Length: 389
Ligand code: FES
Ligand code: FES
Image 1 (tube, rainbow, N blue to C red):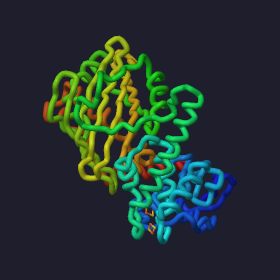
Image 2: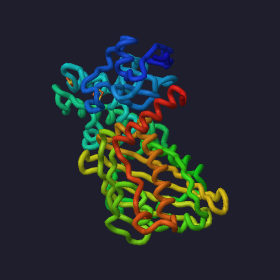
Image 3: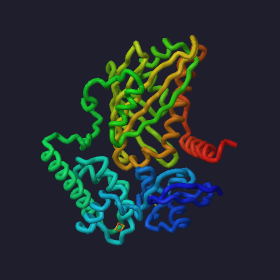
Image 4: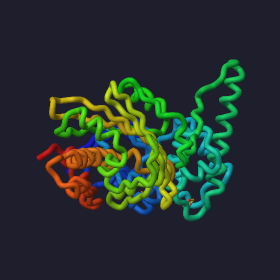
């Protein structure tokens, strides 16, 4: 057991929880916040969704201990939230609930849609809402309620803009990802520094960012040359297969498995490199046909010579997920998983560049066991939470 402290609905709270206690149980059993409903307890139905540091999170698959110090909002805590007030009224108006079991999670997701995707149309709303299940009402009323709130906010924004005689830039248009390489647009923007990319990512609403690095025992020149070889680089990514390579553009797919999650993204990507800065950006987009989730991302990397025979590769991944898999995009477990993937990618690069190995040995990717990796990441987080012992 350990004692954790966090803010729930604006109040500082503390309580003792077992290492395995999930946030949903902790909120309900320890703090009697029973507005958070538990349905599947497997991260599927979305009924248990609460806000953790203003992001929707499934409380049934979030350890309470991992939320130490966090700011949590449950359905009991939206009294002063203007968006939620509009949503509550709209749900009422459009008969968007019956038994109400799914409603706390629906409202949390709906609020996220309204704030993150102000131009969302019906198809987008349905897509974004696909991780929340309702067993009795059906979705027409729920979607209509969200649409009406979005419409009212757009109209209000238009009135304000006309009144001020300026063009409002508050609304960030929803961009549908497609896998066609034309959708990648012009050549990816190559920032002068990683810091500039970080600033750029701050402008991208709904995007997540993960940084990592690895070191390989080879000279910077050799690593830079290797990183230009897209088929070789793809060969270092477990599950990645290129089906088409044309200059700086590639098409292919990548299969990802992590514990109970699995996806296979088909997509296209384009690479731009700056020889002087030893810096590259791979910009891509793809779709998982199984879950119908869409992803877009930039992988920026920068090389730094640590010595004549050692190079550090800094990786800055910025990505956005839409659809059912979006619920996982910001979880700490997934962040740790990606960092582990970056480290394993580094091992594969070192192996591929090793001149003492045979070709067959070099081409051996560091294979990932999704179950072992899931529990490895989980264990690492638990060790960090309780201090490595
Ligand atoms: S109870 Fe958490 S997603 Fe179903
Ligand atoms: S209103 Fe009953 S489960 Fe959605």
